[in-house]
Length: 329
Ligand SMILES: NC(=O)C1=CN([C@@H]2O[C@H](COP(=O)(O)OP(=O)(O)OC[C@H]3O[C@@H](n4cnc5c(N)ncnc54)[C@H](OP(=O)(O)O)[C@@H]3O)[C@@H](O)[C@H]2O)C=CC1
Ligand SMILES: C/C=C/C(C)=O
Image 1 (cartoon, rainbow, N blue to C red):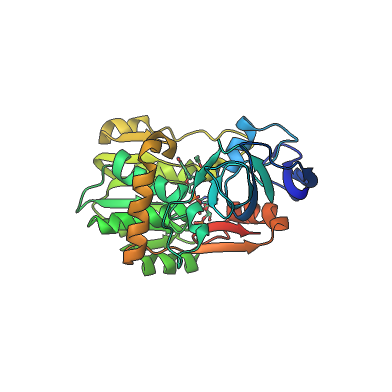
Image 2 (image 1 turned 60 degrees about the vertical axis):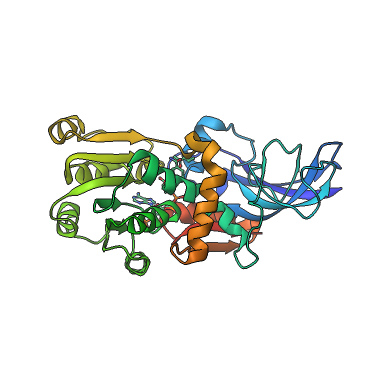
């Protein structure tokens, strides 16, 4: 018998999440049956989607949704032997009994000198999101100018670096001066702190006086409207996320984008990285290749202790993370 800890959604979030919306529970897990494995979590991912998806995909009392890198500690499933590392969609749990259907083995030949936590970040779902946004949605081309917001985060930092690899001019916005310095370290051509600039419009104009060919949108809300007005004619916008709206209790309205889109003849496409799932293995190999070649830098914001999952989640929503937010058990 193993005693597992889980974090439960005690109460649907109303506005910004509170400590009391979560509840830590303990349970005794049964021994794995034929075809099952017992997993021990090593690293848990802290992702923005948990905020909006908790509302549509969860009910109160459910284990918080999420992915983790886990080690197989008991196995009655030949596909997942003891000692294997997997990415599991088991949620906020220290231990999980799984029949294997929600498990993806960590890439074979994962280098010893690369932390397995990156399978939740640069060489995982956020890295894939950046890659598909840049290549499949924007079809970014050499010489183009790209704007990325939430640029110092897990997705934005990879999107910006990929654009640099493609020979683009890249402008990033982020919420602190330390994050702006990080973006410069990554090779962004221009970066600014959207919280302290006197005018977002002026900051965007100053960074790219001729406007933007492409916009990798992670933030939504008022930032989006201002950025849209700075697009070049026939500009392309990849709508990846809308984090500035996730905690809203009332729907934000206007300014409405239609006239700007018509006059500038813009193309705007929302996407989920899961659309390209068949490409994931090859895409992960490409991300790992760039990492090993030193073309892609990766930063993590690691919080220690499973008991700190809610704090890490709320901290990420407040912008405390530079790079990928992770909890190490
Ligand atoms: N479509 C898809 O398939 C996927 C979409 N996403 C989306 O991509 C975006 C980035 O995700 P990810 O890289 O994992 O997260 P990050 O690592 O970027 O962490 C979230 C960051 O969002 C910023 N932020 C929080 N609140 C606001 C706000 N009100 N206004 C502006 N910025 C804010 C903070 O940075 P700062 O200090 O700069 O404000 C914070 O650090 C999210 O919108 C997420 O939902 C992520 C994965 C898949
Ligand atoms: C899969 C992730 C989706 C968002 C919106 O974060």
